[in-house]
Amino acid sequence: MALCKTTFNIRIILLPLYCGALLAAIAPGALAASFAFSEVVHDAHNLARSPWRPRPVKASKSLRQLSPQAYGHILDSHPLWKHDGLPFEVLFYPLGGTFDHPVRFNVIRNGQAYPIRYDPKTFSVEGRLAKKVHIPKNGGYAGFLVKDTGYARQHDEFLSFLGASYFRAVNKDAVYGTSARGLGIDTALPSGEIFPYFQEFWLQRPKPGVHHLTIYALLNSPLITGAYRFEVTPGKSTHIRVHAVLYPRKKIRQLEIAPLSSMFWHGRGRGIRAGDWHPQQHDSSDLIMANGDGEWITRPLNNPLYTQVTRYTLDHPQGFGLFQQDRRFANYEGINTQYQKRPSVWIQPLNDWGKGQVELVELPTNNRNLDNIVTFWVPRHSPQPGQAFSVRYRLNFFRDAADLPPGGHPLATYLGTVPHGVGSRRIVVNFAGGGLGRLPANTPVQAHISVGPGARLIHSAVHFDPLNHQWQMQAEILPPAHHPTNVRLFLESRGHVLSDTWTYLLQRGKES
Image 1 (cartoon, rainbow, N blue to C red):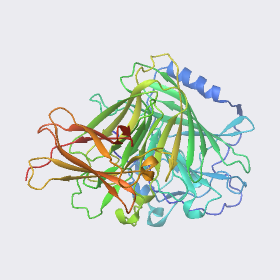
Image 2 (cartoon, rainbow, N blue to C red):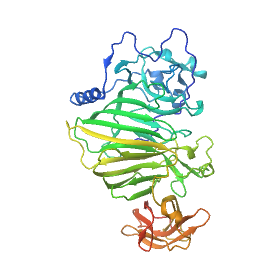
Image 3 (spheres, one colour):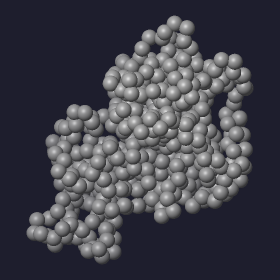
Image 4 (cartoon, helix red, strand yellow):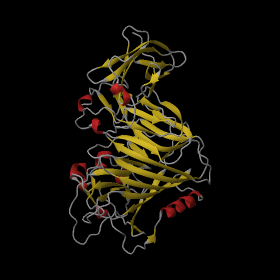
């Protein structure tokens, strides 16, 4: 299970280049090779037809023993493309900590690919660790990050690839939160999760004034290989267009497309605070899905007492993603964490994904440094060994988007218990947006609520909030004694649907 966050908030200090050094650069005497994405696809196909070989562990023992905090003190002081007048700079992560498998890198220029040589002089060690940490001559790179040279220094990093097939991005003035992955396999299954990994990258040298970056990658694993193209455009929203061509080596029980990983500890009656004083702590608050038939579904996230897996069947989905809806600092009070600045992430298919399921995995946690939320798309029919499988989609990392969701939708969810009750729960959901904002205050609005077998809806009511011009639904529901109930609701008036669908797995409350 993907619990631990796979990237760290590594501080990068840029030091001046020293004379005569060509660091993080093309390997001396390296032979250039013509490059096209079709070559990476060809490599992935050939790789799938050969036996899988475990990756070598190349990090020294002393580097593997570094804590995340100590690993963060190893700095890339000589970025690729620095002083070249280009819109981006690339800084490399060294091998160390849990990142002990080397990754190969290449630069594409004028249609030719040149391998990037490893040089230990690329890195410097900050502070007291300088005398304790030795960067070996025969080490390697574990990943990379990209900076936008047009941003202010404190907001210039916008993209990072580090660990397995993990990557993450931020929009301008945001803080890293939800992570993406190239691919997932068998998450939360008894057989155990398999982590495919990027073993080689090709970085397209950007042209001056062109504000997007193209990255190619070769993915490998015991069960599947793949060729990836990422077209990245940073800005107020950071967009990543992904094209992947996959080749299964063996039959795969559960192939997971476009996985996202995030964290939800507690907030608004959901999750266990475990003594934490903050009002809320989470990278994301809701899973939002758009079905092909036009229905939008909002599922608030939870920190359950045990592992919880929920599947939502969709037909030709328009998209899905993890949203951070509350943007007010006072509702988090995290001076160091800045959860109100964590990006929402939306995945939009660019080819026909057909029928399948969005799966949501929620794991119990009492640690904000552990990712306990995973969601991904599972196609109804997985590709067979030897069969190519092509998928295209766009990732959007953003703060706010007026058209997502496009209609009236749930803005906030609050859960509570009923005093002197016998296990019943109170649900409060605020709705706004779309046509709801234009309704007169005296409009007769009702909640259409359905509950699962064994549950009982005790009462419900909808009230107009004149201060925020939104509608608040309140309900009391008694779930079954021994299992959660699935609750679905939307707002309606005189037979007309007014909002998207809200859904949640509701547990019985403690009797008082």
